Length: 529
Image (cartoon, rainbow, N blue to C red; front, side):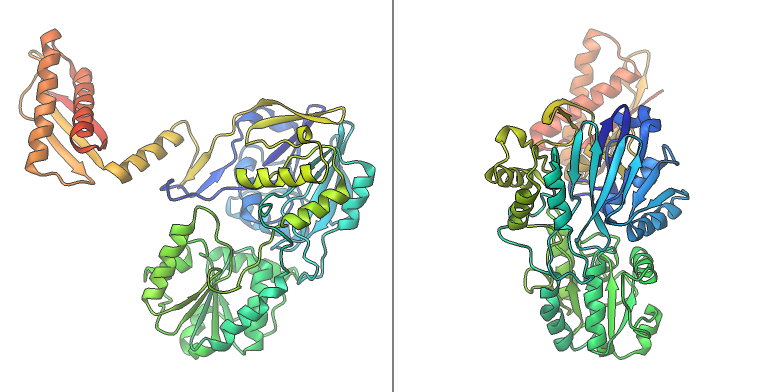
């Protein structure tokens, strides 16, 4: 989520989500931190969405909960995807549909939209003109010269803006470390055809639910090899239905069938397209791997993982691959076949764009720190002065004044966790830390009954332990550590219930750390006799 400010008004470009890593148990998604603009919601002129992937639109429903009438600007497919998502949140949005080549005003921001190709159709870059200068934001893009939808990235438009003078260039950094040019989407057709030609039984394809171009390739292959196709998963069914209705997905008549019809069809005549390419535990593919899905993977089935491997998801993905292989499936993925091409510009494309845009200042965005740094190095090599290439992290404020971009401050940009129906909250980081501690060290509850006259326990404490072995040696040692601490405290004064709970927690923590090198989550409860 990027926020632009001019003349006291705000323009938001994209508002997506992060997906949790293994170190973030119990988290559904991670939102941008809205706290720095929460008291300025009425100053927001619009949200511009560059394309329909979750990491660019997934946070919109949560922002609209705070102000429902913020206009959303985007192309036809992007708005259709966000509308379906907002309907689930029971929000009726204000939508403004645009096409590439159009210009329109949003308060003091004069917006121009340029076509870019990516792994989803209908993506755009946005040029933002203000009295303070011209900013060009690429969104996610690549320069595929043979795109499936014949929609080329508007390089003449980029060059025209370069001649006008781009004061600040925000460009996709995801593939900045990769040399050369990203190969075209068409290049994976032979690998997909090979899967369809050699698979003896069912084919199960897993992909992002918004990866329209990849799913088009699978549908085309199914048609060539006389297989029927069924979609599985709520988001997959919804998004592909939208894409087909709007003409972005071409499906031959009679090719799609309901998944319930699979049992009545020959195994070598069906293709199942589902979610779960990143090992998400609740997605269809992971449930198949765990034998928790109505589709039972069997010997001779072929599973095609037709998406990239997102950094941080490796363990989850390989766990799913292992599970599928265990049941007899042949799993085809990026590591053993050319079944994926990136949707992002590689270093050669980025250099080409720098040379035609000729920006005065560069702000690499979209990527991890190493990607941003690699992108910055490319900009410098093309002649952008080093001091005018800003590598910054989330929350950093950059001012553009008199054609010069400088870091001028910082705003809050914490991770905001969505867990179940709960969004953020003051205890979000603390709750996550407790979950990690529980997963590593377990939990102990201590129950004591206190004689308030003497400050002594009326009977030995009781322990309820979870997550490690609670044997007699442990109980004796834990009891002794608490008794010793209580005697020491009573030499000073007679303790009350609250003080005794602190003594329980602190003494057991010290003893567990010393004896077992573990610090469980400890809850102490003291009841007055």
